[in-house]
Image (cartoon, rainbow, N blue to C red; front, side, top):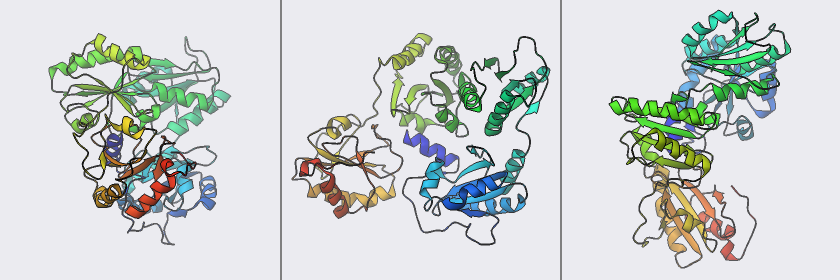
Length: 480
């Protein structure tokens, strides 16, 4: 959900790429004497393929975190001359390039290697020393050659260790394993065993984690097969989630089962035992995660929970729907298992977080809530314009009088509804990534058309008339 994304992004020191911004400041990588290379689409490939190792910052000039990073990035670039090249891409100019590399927030830093088909994520702090240490580590081998007897010590130290068993490090399968290790070196520890080990055939790949061993069972030992195996199996059955690993769970692609706990409460130990047992039944399908329900109370409220732990909710990010385990129900193995199995089987309905439906609609703008969204917006006889807003959003407050005037101007047209919804208090099917977001749902296109124009009454009115099905145009439109 949006609120989780925003909070996690803020905690990680980045901002969402598509919200409202102050465009009044410039970034600091424009000086011709800078050790940071200013990159554009034309020269980007030559830069990353012309250096054995490079780090690229994708930034926006208005981004406060980017401006704070700039002097540290410059210092690091100077200290890393001869080790790694540092570059920067202005995403307000090079939009296609930033889209190609899936930049969703600023600043985003990615590590590139000559000859590699894709970059890896930067995984350290934003001070010059952090950047320098991280990039120097990138020059070290991505794996170590060890004996089988060394594995337990590695697992005790690093929690997750991926071990490849090969006759030599130059074996064809080993070469692909090393490519995977190089790509994922910032996330996991990699080792290679070349000695014969009882019960282990060659080639083999095993993932060791605390108390568990996962065996790669693919028929082809290629990087494209090994990497997904590692990403899918490196997670514990029930792991702690936080800002530092949230994105990894998202990238795993499984629905998240959030378990909010008061770690000081005796009942939490019982719930963890219950959840751990249930997690075994959904291995490879769901990610069960625990977190401090006191610290993250606002997160739990965003899901429709009370904010007082314990609370459990399954979040399906692919559909933007949540399935709350009733807080009034006792948390037992059977009850939790049935709830999760009901989601898997499609026999339970999603929980819709919603304010109460207003008793009247006397204002110029129709007030939507979660419970009324689909019945109003998806009415195929109406053209419906929806503003998704947040009460704290300054840009939303600036828009409000203009939007009210827009609603007043269409009040006499029964075929058009000018509506708004507090997206922080109500669930909607729309994937909202910034405030305000305005989407038009004409009678003939309920997938919606995003409005990205000027936020004035006249511009919005023209957009509605141009795209509305009830105005006789019936035109075809680009869908979201």
